[in-house]
Amino acid sequence: MNTNTETFAPFDTANHLNTVEDVAAYLEAVIEDSDSDDDSTVIAQALGAIARSRNFSQIARQAGMSREGLYKALSADGNPSLATVIKVSHALGLRLRFEATA
Image (cartoon, rainbow, N blue to C red; front, top):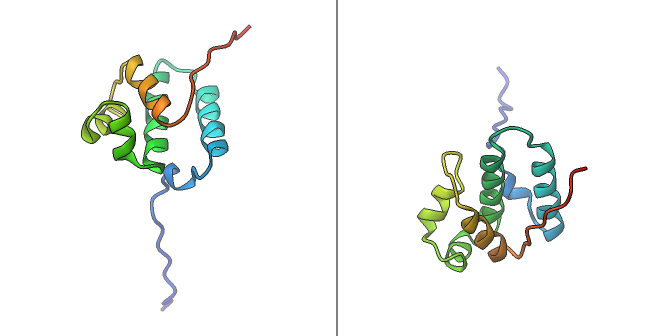
């Protein structure tokens, strides 16, 4: 019988967002790859992963929300307002930018 059993932890993007460059590249990839009607959900979840990679409680305070409220807003079932996305982005040191697609 083989006694070398390997166990694996679930992958969590938050564990791999160590620098501002990582965060920017991750968000760009998420936005570029999202082409469905659920774009806002995917982007909100990406912001949630980024917030988890930082001090989530501090991000919530800076965004003017409770930790629980922010967690819910940025979850798969959440539906954050644009105001929430902007506040969280600013708390993370990010800026939203729009550019022409054509």
